[in-house]
Amino acid sequence: MDLLHSYWRMEYITSPKEKEGDGHENPFVRLPQTENDREALILYRGTHIYLILNRYPYNPGHLLAIPYREVPDICDLTEEERNELMEVIVLGKRCVDTTMHPDGFNIGFNLGSSAGAGIPKHLHAHIVPRWNGDTNFMPVIGKTRTLPQALDATWEKLKAACVQLTDKNHA
Image 1: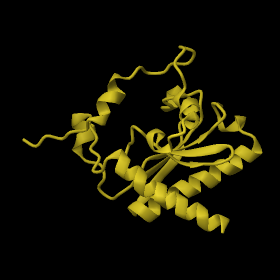
Image 2 (image 1 turned 90 degrees about the vertical axis):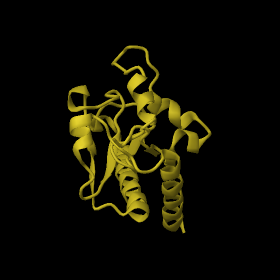
Image 3 (image 1 turned 180 degrees about the vertical axis):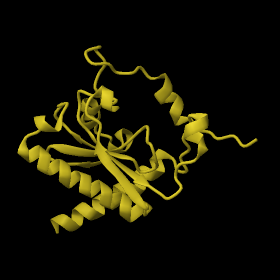
Image 4 (image 1 turned 135 degrees about the vertical axis):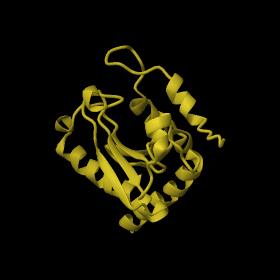
């Protein structure tokens, strides 16, 4: 029998689940306050929006584009925030495209807990790279996902791509 080790999953499984108004600190507000982007997995900081590698990814390279301001819905964003959100989503897709070469993407929002939002009070866009054949029996039967690369190694590659892409845009 082969053993699959996804040590990072235990942190997610055992962490307290945030519920609206239960007093838990919002990580999407706390993370950009840190000065260590690598530790926070932040890839890019914009004026209103930041880009982060998902700590509990669906697939390798799963990114989140998040407003600094805590708002639950896209309708609550200012026009400036909406425009920058789309630009950061495009940047995230390009970073993953150039480093990981996926076959496709799922990009979208889960608005509200009934729609699957893990932190419903803080809007965030998912940028999920997909590869042909990237799903198998493990998520269905074993309720387990397998990731072929450590988050730290993924962060390094994506950070370099984000820096390169944003430098080109400002040159």
